[in-house]
Structures are given as C-alpha cells and as structure tokens.
Image (cartoon, rainbow, N blue to C red; front, side):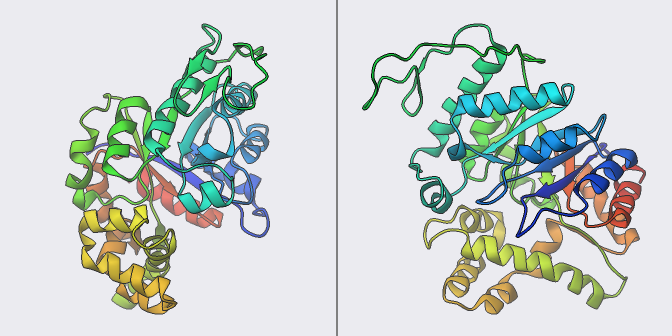
Length: 344
C-alpha cells in the first residue's frame, strides 16, 4: 500500500477569522502534517493568512486551495507566489481554480467563458514570471502582456519581476472537475484538487490522468469524522457531509449549469443528482439532503470509529491519491488523524 501525506485545510473564513489559526497550524506541523491550505470565496483572501502562518511555522508546506483566477491578473498572482515563497523559505504551493460563473461574473465582474483556455494561459504566464528567464511578452486570447487592446495608450512595456524568485519553479495545483479540465490539469500542472473523490470509483478519472507525470500530486479534501461504533452514530457523522453535498450538487450554480451536479452524475448518482438539484433550487433543502445517498457520502469521506476509518484507509492507499486534506477544529482531531493516517 502507498503512503499518504496529510494536509490541514483551513478553507476560507466565515463571518470572522478562526480564533485558533496559529495554534492548530503549529500543532499540525508538530504532528507531521506536510501541508496547510487556505481558500477564498467572496470574503477573506487565500494569500494573506499564509504570509502570516509563514512567520510562525518552520517546515510545513503552505498552499492556496484555491486562489480564484478572476480575482487577480496572472502577474499579480505570480507576485503573491514569489513573495510568500521567499517569506516561507521555499514552502509555498500555488493552487488555482476558475470558480463558477456566479462568482466570476457576480463578484469579480469578469467574463466566465472559455475557462480551460483561460487557465492554460494563466498558468503559462505565471510559469514565465517565476522562471524569470525573459521579459513577459505574451499575446493570448484572454491575457496580453503588454496590453494593446481597447483603451490602451500604447505605452506598455514587457517586463520581468524586479525581485529574483527564491525558486524558479513553484508547484502549481489546479482545482478541476470536468473531464477536459482534469485532462488539461494532468498536462500543465504539478498537482490536482478534486472537489470530491471516491477511491472506490477510480475509473471516473482514470482516463483523464493518463498524461500526468510520475510525480503528479493528487490532494483530496476528505471529510474526517470520528464517531462511535453504532450505525446510528456513523449516520450522524455522515449527516454534515450529506448536507455539504446537497449544497454543492443542488445549490452551487444554476439549473443546467452546475459543474458539481454534472460530476455527481458521472460518479454514479445519475438521476439522483438532478433530483438533489431540483429540490434544492425549489426551496426544499431538507429534501435535497435526504436525496443524497449516505453510501456516496461515505465513499468520499472517512467517518466512523477509529478501527473503521483505519480499515477504509486501505482503499485510499491503493488509489492515486497522494495527500488527504482534512478540516480539524481542535487538536484532538488533528492527533487522531495523524495516528490513523501517518502512523497506521
């Protein structure tokens, strides 16, 4: 069986910053977690917490999972990456994702068409900035450096960063769901974030990963819930995961344009995915949650008493997954995860 790395997922902030951000991150580092990750939606940003954590940690890897493309130009994102990589002593990993049209166009006020082409250009520009081998002269369909389009005054110059990068290549991960997006990610990136992944259904992604390099990383957000041994207690542990799935499959996007609904269908939920969406968009959130199969929630998570989690980990170890990313609200949860995943 293969080894699994363990990462800690902070995600994005809710109404307020997490009060134990530093303490739990330091505890995760002490326990052997290899990485800690932050995210953004339309509130806190993904980069600032990592700059803060770089100052209070020594060896744990720091990553964005994910930074949204529409939030910044590719050169601005490269500046963030270059800066945090220096501040952390070369511990930064750049995770990127396009997000959905509701966020891209509604929050960022940017067009949401052609997401794959945008991602490819975005990554290429970042690679050039970080490599610092030549001035950035890039004339793509979506990004132009220098810009010469409508409104240009014609005075742009090709530039390269003033600051020399600590590393000339920073690992880039991409959050991808659709088959074409996953295939492109395996081609152009160093790693991949699936939204949800079932090691029992590896065939869903197998063909899309054939172009990946031997050291390609797959980091999966895996809900981790320790419960008592009874079926009722395990079902209670799965309840929050079913709620999350109902929100993503049912509510994150419009009818006919929800990447998560389509992914759930490809993963075997079929008509159940459309039923979840129909009920959620119709205002029946409780019905949408009930429509999420508990067995599917169980496949994408690690839930139950320690002995059950340890047994189910064997399937994850036999998959292409390299890192499990878990949320933990206290040190006990981190300790349990470390004992089962890293020592088991």
